[in-house]
Amino acid sequence: MIRGPRAQVALVTLAAIAVAVFLATIPTFRHFFDLGVYRGAVRYWLIDGGDLYDFRYQDTEYGFTYPPFAALALSPLAITSWPVAVAAAALLNAGAVALLIRWQFAPILRRHGRPVWTPCALMFLGFLVFEPSRDTFSYGQVNLLLLVLVCSDLRNRKMSGVGIGLAAAIKLTPVIFIGYLILSRQYRQAATAIATAAGATVLALLIAPEASVRFWTGAVWDTNRIGKLYYVSNQSLRGVVARLDAPSTLWLAAVALVVAYWCWWVRTRRPDPLTGFAVTGVIACLVSPITWVHHLVWLIPGLFLLLDRAMRTPAVVPRRRRLAVLAAGFVVMSSSIVWLWWAHPMGWDAFAGSNAYVWISLVVLAALAREAWAVAPAPAHGIHAGADRS
Image (cartoon, rainbow, N blue to C red):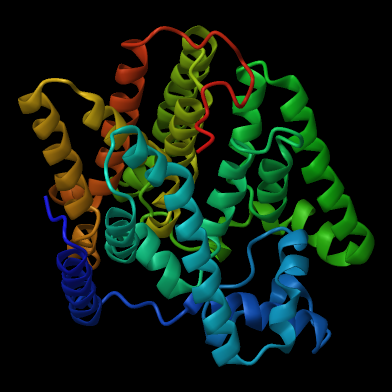
């Protein structure tokens, strides 16, 4: 173990240089494309007077796909220059990463008597390499911010559910966490989340009635505006089926099976909130019609939880084996391996590689569920039961 402060600074410095070389070498920089969509859409809507959902970015098929409340939240971009918008997006995402590390990684280190600052600095650099978070930075996406909103409900005793409600009003994916609250009998928190999401949606309806009607009666169902289902970046069960060119009924059956298992597991296992949130994040990635690679940041709570459980393993050899498996998974999900099949993602020849992150999601789900069965059921259903407060 490196103990001296100079040695630790040198280690972090060398790691930062290696990360910089990696980012400069791997050709997956996204040029803040999604940030450009957000900024262009709200400018077109608020300044040019156009319809929010008619906007297309740089003559592509991509336009604004979130509910109108998200456009209101992003409205400052309409009067922001491009360099300022890029800087703001980078700083907000960096702040989100810092919060996730403070909330979920630093407590693991403290529980196991490990130093905090150097591992946290290395973990921050790891977020810059891990493809889902790396893409969130380089697209200028909002995934990490939404993850922070959802995870904040694990710490917010007085107003639990507000973070989930706000996240669900901005983007539809976090709605599944309301389902988790209901399944786990956290009815007060679920009611708070529903009321928050509904309040934000009604606010958007009052401020932007035309955009709201357009979204909820039409644009929300138009998946063609989001992208092709078979595109290799779509690492959901729907993407697997689309790349096999199989009937959509196969996807519906797979989703029904996964959701049924999730409902049964939550109701019978009564997981602690950390595990429940982690499993629900993985389920969201699997069942969503489109889960771009940058959406896979919802796996992060589960990966932190598996890291904690690996470090708790008393026997040295099994502990090292578990840590090695986690490290291997990190390497694979940082390698951009699915893009090797970018040009030819279809068919059985590409089945294993083009869906690599789906397989990892399923492994994470199985590991989380298996580990939960190895411990006693949580004695309480409150959202904060068993949550770490450090």
